[in-house]
Image (cartoon, rainbow, N blue to C red; front, side, top):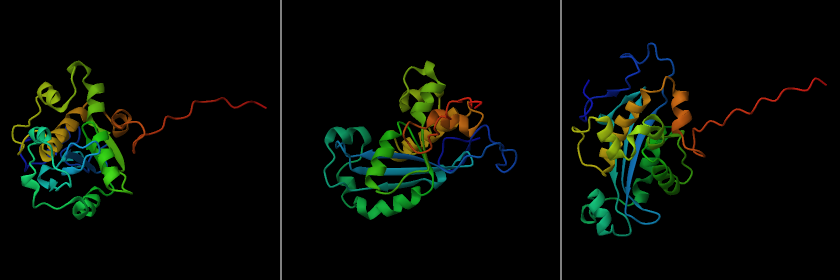
Length: 224
């Protein structure tokens, strides 16, 4: 099974070759999301990427990406991180011109991200009224699944798990690359859990959509 390039679907190892046969608990539609910003305290987004996972299959061939021109310049130290220059964004649309398209692309889906509060907080702030169906945080899930890894940033996990990232186009800290790598990470992590409910009980951060409340403690009914 090819897993590194941008043209081959990548299947969750626990799902059979025919997704409609023998799946105990199908996954909902997931969108692996990554955003890059301009470094402000409340950052303007300069890049957004989305890669779908349908029925446990990562589909990098359906990746969608947006480059966005911010109103404030990107400082040099931020440019050195993601490589997105102010000059490269000069002719790109501003956020209001792409917001509806991005919101429509996210509609009705769970989102997956590494340290998902970054994506969740930025997108809910910039897309008023939008909420995902649920949030999967691969950082949270990795800490539980691989405590021996020590460090759980995306780079240490790629190395620790030997994720097949060599064929991913682009570079680290670009939204498309990071979303693809995060999708590969989720599929690796998911292989350790038998059911969707088991996975989400760990992976959904507190106070975010998809978090199941704990059942109330049992209280015995009085006899009279």
